[in-house]
Image (cartoon, rainbow, N blue to C red):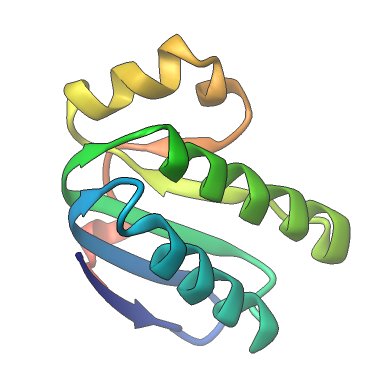
Length: 111
């Protein structure tokens, strides 16, 4: 798993993730995302364009980050999910109704 971050002025912090997200990588992902919140991010977008697989531990990370954003900043977690195979996971768990899910970053910009 690789993580990168961009924080354009006046825009949500964008975290681009590549690789597989599973029980082995979810602790690092959790720590990385919570560090962005600790740094003051009040809106967070996670770009999953480069992700080939994610499991339930990853969903748990996203739920925790979303809850913290709501509780502390009144915000929501947004996810970029352009691949049907990943989007299906969010639909099956009804998390597509919890997170803001889009198929591309606004303007097609990458992190």
